[in-house]
Image 1 (cartoon, one colour):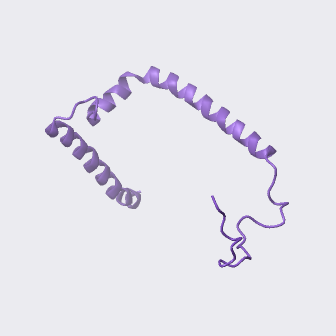
Image 2 (tube, rainbow, N blue to C red):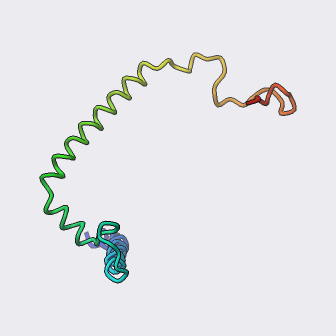
Image 3 (cartoon, rainbow, N blue to C red):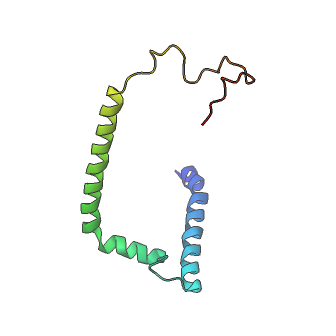
Length: 105
């Protein structure tokens, strides 16, 4: 357990430094909160808007599942390229000096 905690320590320290630097930058530079909110403002908004976030997350999750389902159906019905005579990744047998090798726009 101690070894696992020691392995995670650099990541935790880096995350704390990044969040601390973000907080300091926002406070010292006087950045508008609408442009770059401070980490404590972000955390507060997440905590206070839990119901709204959950409702929006459920809508987004439904859209993601529906999109994946449509994509899977489309891919399963797409004609397979494995029946073609030449693979799309096979190198060309024509030489580069052959004028038929270059396509004109």
